[in-house]
Image 1: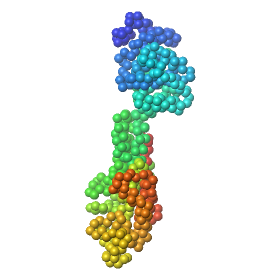
Image 2: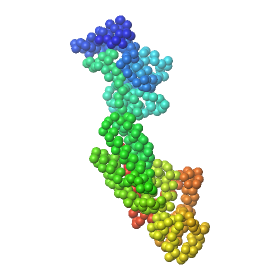
Image 3: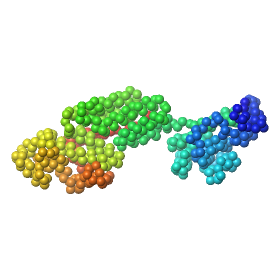
Image 4: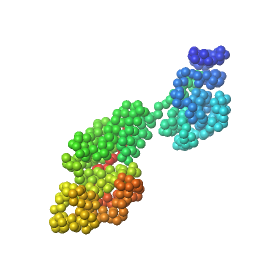
Length: 496
């Protein structure tokens, strides 16, 4: 039966030919050779009229792209795809055996009439029948040749390994892939039955490549970007189990984002501070659904550390100085450094220096108010408060800061007066940082008082000295490393 649209466009003689061809395809007694010859007899009619088939519902966005086709031993399917999408350029990827077919396509009059300069628009490239990595490279090279081009791949032609490797590489690079699906009779496609269908990209369907990006963003501490990418993935993923797992992954990321924002240490008594419980809840959910987002033991370490941070909370105080928060800030500086944000990293390291000095004074010296410090500890060592202030002024070369908060340099000067080895080690290392002009470098940085960005090398020097000071303050040998391990965020898995 002749479709109405075809009757409206074909001549009477063409319709007569098509009626005879369709009769042969309907007759079970017709052999394969007869079917093949009848298809060739109406090939010119199909080439002229198939682009007008209203059932060829090709997305307009797929037209006028750079078309890449795998070529087998039948030229007509590739020719029809080319005539339907009317590409800006045509790549014919053939095997050694199918090169002659590719040349036949290149010389086809209907194909050549698409462009005023067809020899510049039709390009032949050879594919391997066995080496799939080589075929992947072919497609990548074509994409590189036209970096600003929009591409389309038709993997219908050629042996299976050619079409499969071409489609796989195209999917990976987010290039749309079409396939000709037609009514086959004894291995021959019935004329006018083939339709171009667009294949769903499995990497979009399951979100594979985005997951790799999420992993990298999470590892560098860019949790907001990882969270936003999860939202973007929802637009492409249609696999319901994967979407359910994505919900849990996003919840997991948001807990770590909350932690990274120090939500556990807000001034007000806010439930959001219970970051440990939030992480435990999402960890339980992961176990319930058999989802391995990150190493279980690592998450358990993180929950334990967050509990320690939260249990050390002292309500109503504007400044909280304890070894758990000190280690947490140090771990935060490492995340900023991994992301290449060295100014941010050094700003956090400087806060570690401040907190280290404050912990020593508050924990060991009985000073509970750094704005109006109680100097009894130092009076026992040096004498009365006036002698303490005189000793301070001699070491600091400026007047004792009565009536204002003790700054970092003030606190380090007091620690120099202490008789405790840890205090002297902390102050001594701070002095060596000063001699190495690391404090001057920090002061000239954008996040301090200047406009000079901090380099990776400068960060590493600052980090090395700060780490030593923090380890002295945290406790016995090895205690800092144990806490830092518990405070370090995990590496998330790629697969869902």
